[in-house]
Image 1 (spheres, helix red, strand yellow):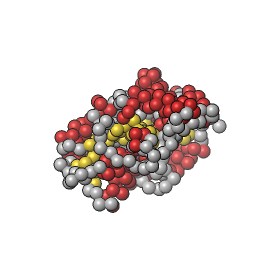
Image 2: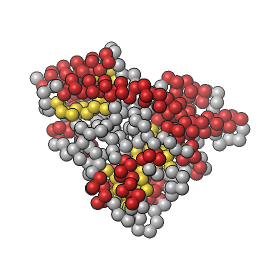
Image 3: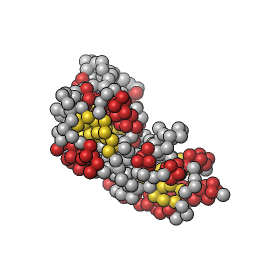
Image 4: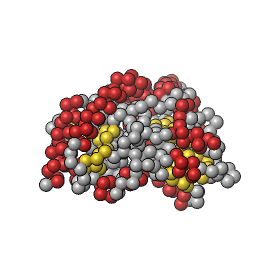
Length: 377
Ligand SMILES: Cc1ncc(COP(=O)(O)O)c(C=O)c1O
């Protein structure tokens, strides 16, 4: 069966050139980057080259990049690392209702541990309500965490504006840019953030490697303790091959954005336009968003059953966050946008990628329209 993969927000395929770059570090160049000998130093050089490449992608200095084992770890580290260095009354964590669970569940755990936590609202488009954020900020605010692109709707958040408000109150700013990396340009200086998360597997790199940008001078404690790796910020022998793959994937992004962003947006729009002609279909969110994501609800349809039926026909799609799929937890993102449960439960996420073709989009459209029609009968 010729399968159509429209779930690039869950994960992307490894770029062939990233794989090529990784292979030597899984074979002969196996040294530990902390070792003083030739084997170690070759691995060290590769890790540092990758660090420079990832830094270049987001306008950071190489010394500001801390490699981690995932976007989730980076999000945990951003919040917990900030809290670990909190002094005086400045202890409050402020985030938004549509963050990934890596941020939201960390914030919840911090609240259970006694830290004040506030969650700012979003509007019907899933965009952060800046007035509500302003109301929730105060002189006790330690860190504000706002994502750049939402994983379920693709909605772009006003991170730079949120950062300005946070700065006025003297708070640190963290941005989860996992779903923005590789899909749109990300610049830590333009966003004016102190901390920023990326994950390699969302931008055609390998799974199990991410990074946290830590602006020079930011007070941040470690999450993983042990050796002195990553300038004492994150212990553990580096995932050399993974880091090299991340660097190689990051280096491909600027050219790919120039080549693919508009093409992917046009394909997404065409896919969505046709789906929206199905009676009872509605687009979830209408504000600015990344090029590759569509989120559409089909009245009267159970999205989980739809995803399973689509899979049988060769179309890979999703009901929302990958971690929520498989469970029956309704999307907290669509709920926060104010949609009633029926609409949340009937929402399908389609996310295109670099290799998505026009023919694939047409086939997927035909299949989705047919399956929705069948399920309605
Ligand atoms: C917005 C966002 N943040 C964080 C993560 C977690 O990244 P990872 O899968 O590398 O742990 C994801 C993954 O879906 C995500 O979409």
